[in-house]
Every structure is written in C-alpha cells, then in structure tokens.
Amino acid sequence: MTCITKLQGENGDFGEHSNCFKGVWNLENKRVVEIIQAGMAWANWTSEQKEAMLIALEAVKKQIPQKVIKTEKSSQACPVCHHNVSWNYCPNCAQKISY
Image (cartoon, rainbow, N blue to C red; front, side, top):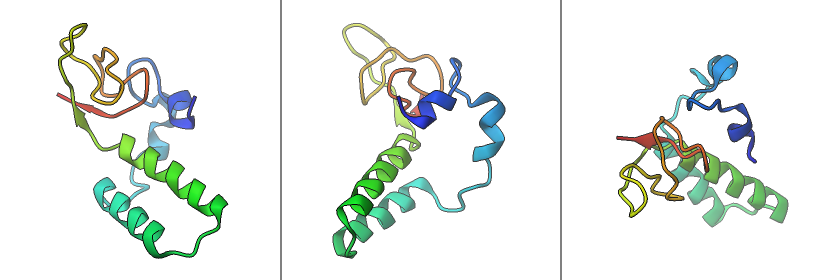
C-alpha cells in the first residue's frame, strides 16, 4: 500500500492530511511528469536515484485525473485498474478520477 493510499480516506479525500497537499506544488502535474522524464533521459543518476524518480513519476501520474471508463462489470470504472469507482480517487489504486 502506498503512502497516498494510507492517507486517503474511504471517501477519496485526505481528511486531516488535506492541508499537507494544498499549495505545496506550484507546477502542474503534467509538467512535473515532463521534467522527471527529461531528467531520466539525460541525468547521470545512480540506480537508487532512478528508482526514486520512477516512484515519484508514478505518484505524480496518479494525481492527473483520468476519465472513468465503462466495463462489463461497472458503468464507472477506473481506467488504470478497472475497479468500480464512485469517488474522486480509485479506492483500489489511488488514481485521481474525473467524470
């Protein structure tokens, strides 16, 4: 279970931790992804640093809202893991959801 999943409540918010995330990042998440990917292409990082950047990249990508999809089992499913969703975040993989 990721740190984000541990902090995230059942209703898709971060409860008492919500203020920890407000105003912390000034860059748009898509731009952060671009910067990390560019850095991975040219930076001379150790394998540990590369692993840390991959973890950070995965976490940032989860914060970019993805539209729900329709599956055989659900009319509103997460586009990443296909789990049924009804909140702003997938309860299974923590992907941010848009409707």
